[in-house]
Amino acid sequence: MTNILVTGGAGYIGSHACKALAQAGYTPVTYDNLITGWQDAVKFGPFEQGDLLDRARLDEVFTKYRPAAVMHFAALSQVGEAMSQPGRYWTNNVAGSLNLIEAAVAANCLNFVFSSTCATYGEHDNVVLDEDTPQLPLNAYGASKRAIEDILRDFEAAYGLNHVIFRYFNVAGADPEGDVGEFHRPETHLVPLMLDAIDGKRDGLTVFGTDYDTPDGTCIRDYVHVCDLVDAHVLGLNWLEQGKGSRVFNLGTGSGFSVMEVIGHSKAVTNREVPYSIGPRRAGDCTKLVSGSTRAELELGWEPKRSTLETMIGDAWRWHQNGNYEK
Ligand code: UDP
Image 1 (cartoon, rainbow, N blue to C red):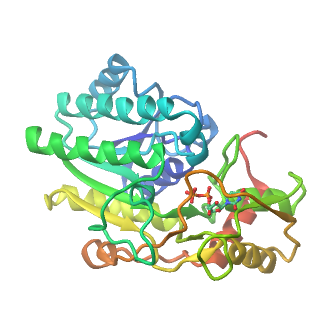
Image 2: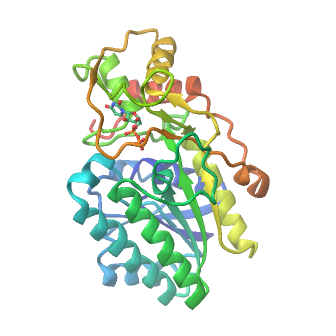
């Protein structure tokens, strides 16, 4: 069996990636410090607890498993927190990733799949974002991810580190079989917060701003199902295995939905009211982030299968009602 080191394998996207890797015949080895992840989410391969900043521990894990590739999900990922505590983002995300990348190169593990973000693009009025759009991040989260992309390019030039960079748009949904799902504490993301509001686990949802330059005044995002997203990662791994070289891919569907539209769909899917109120803008939010690229479809053969709002919200709702890691 081929081992793949999955950092952040106990987190939302990483745990879904581990399932996809296991289904594709790989052994996912989770490396996670459990600060935002859940050990109960590690179901598809071995677990090694450790921090990205702990180089000795990373070296130990590389020596023990000799992974053929790294999938690097582990990161702090909240825009609001990044604005108020930027140092944590530069330390955990950038210094931590540099440590991991150096450990991978030292172990001669030269295939690397990296979770980046559309937040690296920043604000581009009325432009669909393709992989060549200039990266002008508005917040420390996006800036930290852009810096890691730069590190990967430098390490490719110096040491031949082959990498696939995926710039995610807004990830939502859950494993339809209910093995894993989205579970953050604290939760900051729109879909799970809305589901909490719908079934009374929180007082209501606050819509962050209705004065944006969009048809209904709320921010527009491109939502992609977590299962489609992780399918792309397996294709990205295959791409590297085939020696096709380093490449950047956006992972979005090209369709944007406003916060109010997501609320409307949630009402329809759950057949329940969404209690919400209007609040001020959240610092660091862009007006519109929609993927304008079909590169992943054309070059990787990626086909999003579950990325309609109905399916994403339906899968998330089922998970929300039946599963979490606190039980
Ligand atoms: N949002 C909101 N209320 C919330 C959480 C999010 O109105 O309680 C909005 C947020 O301003 C953004 C969209 O929902 O326009 C998606 O936010 P999320 O935090 O889910 O993802 P992000 O776009 O920050 O990656």
